Length: 632
Image (cartoon, rainbow, N blue to C red; front, top):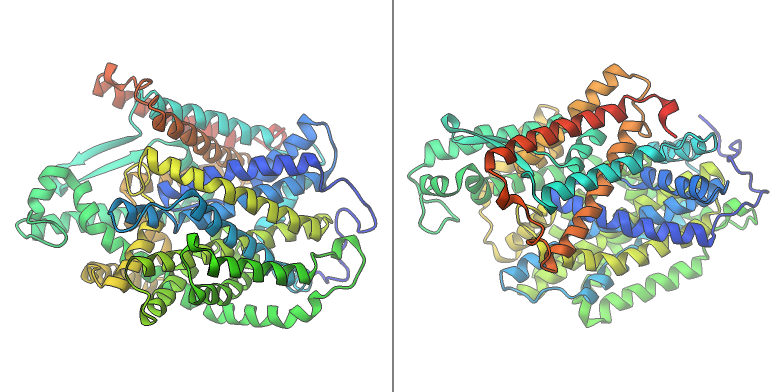
């Protein structure tokens, strides 16, 4: 195991190279907006987000080296530092804030304003960055060789590969362009439907899959195992639970239907209606139980890492004048935290009081520490942020109810607390990963920390526009934007505050999760599969199968910076961006004018969807099976 004292970064501390430049700041800001919007769209569709550090590093390197002909690895690193902050802030925001829009649609509260969304996300983003600053020395430096930081190492390898002109930028940009074109064909001019469904009348259900590049790209990045667990949950929901509900309860009237029997609901809306009224509550119970079990299982590690980080804080006051050991002043951290907490307490637009502000400080610093070290162990993509958020939401909602803050205001306060905590955990985890990449390369921590704050501010200023735009175009909770995590947070909050959650369905879902845990399966992945529509799980599974084929065929190309992974990352970004553009067109009334579906017979549309899906699979395999020498 490498000793910290013996470690030498790629760029020595004594050497000063361009790093915090106009080019890196401007490029990073653009990527923060791009990946923030793309990840927001992706998370609202499938309930999962991806780490943007590696694709941001690739694009940043493409900008600095290929386009601008500059040769500074630290500039490229700064681009990905600022750019990945947008993805992290978006991930925290979309897991929680859409719950406010869902309540507004039900008439319970007023629709959240752009200003309130901006301030909530800004508070979470800045606190996440500030809480991580005093932890850098103890977590990044003192535990070098102890915490592997797998994705940070992969990101550093990508940037180092750029030094030998092996960047993979072409794969990322190709994926972006192809996915944007597919998205425009499917959801823009609507030549083909976005999903293919085959009814299975004997089982009273259907088999379906989406053909969208982003969802298949998620499956490719996750790999075969995780994708198969998601698909297993989908099979359980759609081929066992739904047929059982129809078979055994066909003539029954069950909550929450308004007088309709299950048979009548199925006749009117098919298997999808049964999923919407019943199975999603079972899936919610499975998700809550999986999140809490995940948190409980990691509690020993959480407390150990939190204690060791606090113990290492004394070593954070590093008086070294070396460039690679300079952090932002602790005074900046303290005054910044105080200013943000006062804003949370005193600004009426945030709708949180002193109790909420105190809870945010306590939970925020705790989960910032936990998230930073968990990323060091399992990577940002596997960081259990949702479990931390559910735990925070449950505790804070109970405390708010006990203190008399109930009703609409109490629910808003609970979601506000959960939103800020979720963003803090996501931001702190991303920042620790970026600082680790910088540590390996020889970046200046102080400049990276400023870059993270810039990325958080820019993302906070833009994420509200993205959320409002998407909600106006399709609506959260719709087929296009199911917002599964936010819907879950809404159900949990309502269940605690009002006691109107159908607990019998929730407990069935929780029992399913317990069975998965007993069998040794990753219950969170299976629970997400139960909760999501089958068409999403199937598309993710297609991507996982493609990854499996590539890894068997091309064993040297299984790393996180292989052509297939970079191409899939580009597809996610490209479809997300095109989705935002189409949302703008929809809101402006242009969407209906470019809709060509009325001129094409349904049979032709289905055939076209199959052909498009086959073509997409062929393209993914073409890029994924390329050798290293192709990645230029």
